[in-house]
Amino acid sequence: MTSPPTDPSALHWDPETFRQHGHQVVDWLADHMAGIADLPVRSRVEPGEVAARLPTSAPGEGEPFEALLADLDDVVMDGMTHWQHPSFLAYFPANASPPSVLADLVSSGLGAQGMLWSTSPAVTEVETVVLDWLVDALGLPAAFRSDGPGGGVIQDTASSATLCALLAARERVLDGAGNRDGVPQGLTVYASAHAHSSLEKAARVAGLGSIALRSVPTDADHGMAPAALAEAIDADLADGLRPVMVMATVGTTSSTAIDPVAAIAEVTTERGVWLHVDGAFGGSATVCPEHRDMIAGLEHADSYVMNPHKWLLVGFDCSAFWVADAAALTGALGILPEYLANAASASGEVIDYRDWHIPLGRRFRSLKLWWVLRSYGIEGLRSHIRAHVAMAQQLAGWVADSDDWELAAPHPLSLVCMRHRRDDAVAERAMEAVNASGNAFLTHTRLDDRYVVRVAIGGWRTTMDDVRGAWDDLVAAATRIEGVGHG
Ligand SMILES: *Cc1c(COP(=O)(O)O)cnc(C)c1O
Image 1: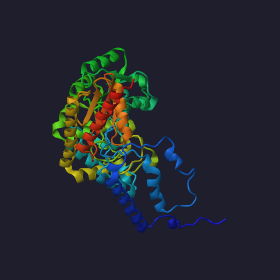
Image 2: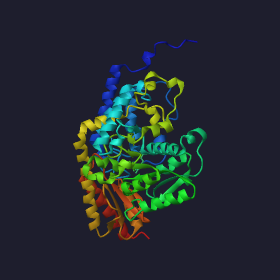
Image 3: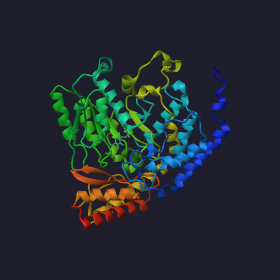
Image 4: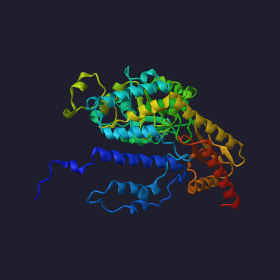
């Protein structure tokens, strides 16, 4: 038996080989960007089609890089739905702007794991400073800045941030006993009927169970009714239950409805309940001063999350989460095994972000946020947001003027919700026809028990021509479907 080689360098690319293949990859991506508008937005593959193009086992011997690159075209691309396509108007955008893409490449190349300040000080300190920048850029309360008791952290997603908020709130109510003894029954959480499902998932993961969730009624504009919130909390208190957290949403996923944060904060402050605000999509808009009304009252919130990885040009994943009192968060999530003990942590002079979220390990995600803020500048980001808001208002005007379609909800940001005036089935089939054509991609929701088509504007390549094209296609499809009857 031969002994294994003690110099494995022959296994790996040398820096010159990396340079050469790296250039090939950047060229491939640049060509993809240049040609993306000609691709069908939504993938048309059938289930299993991509898997069937792959061999059933990994290769025994390594393959040349050219073969890997070729299979991007031959195996993968048919199975891609193009989120960066200018006519991607589905869900909410997941913008991967060019500076963000390159920053992620650098983050991967540096390959640092920033679980502790001491495991790579720059990973922590750039993040802290850039999140402070973002507090100011978005007009958020100064209490979220790191120079007081509060501070921010980058999480993978808003779902994780909301879970962390709930864990901090839970331990504040239980005074740490939940972590020590397990979670007792009778804890409750509150959000509007239109809140994101991540709250219910968080309630399950945090040991409260779905039973803890109170769906608070909304007003005609689909925003939470504060009086109904007060009533729900007081009824639970009277029953001996323990309210843990209220989540207000600024920009719901269905329709970008905006819960009245200031009025909700009065209810939570009076009753000492943790207020978490979910601005996952809408939060990007407050980079523009004219959109800051929607976060009025945020200075009374305990935590806030918004996703730069949706509308603010930072590639997935980058969710910004702030707390007014970091000790409540680290008290709930901090844990120190001997193998992570170090002098810097013991000094109390550094932030160890491992105590601010669920995972231990973390990538250098602030790099892409930093590069986006610097490449575009705050004024560039404002122009980006304002363009989409203007497009949405124009589209809303066309819908309002239509004989066949009508607006289904207010459109304060860049999402337009519309329904067919006469027939939900026509709307549904028309949307499916548009999506099947590959020319645009739209999704739907239900509001007031009607089928509603959502046109979510916000992609970095989207122009008014793309919005016009999708609208014209939708109108034409509905006319055709209604004309031939569909009974
Ligand atoms: C998209 C969205 C979420 C979930 O975001 P993730 O980062 O994917 O977890 C939560 N809340 C609202 C209002 C959203 O629009």
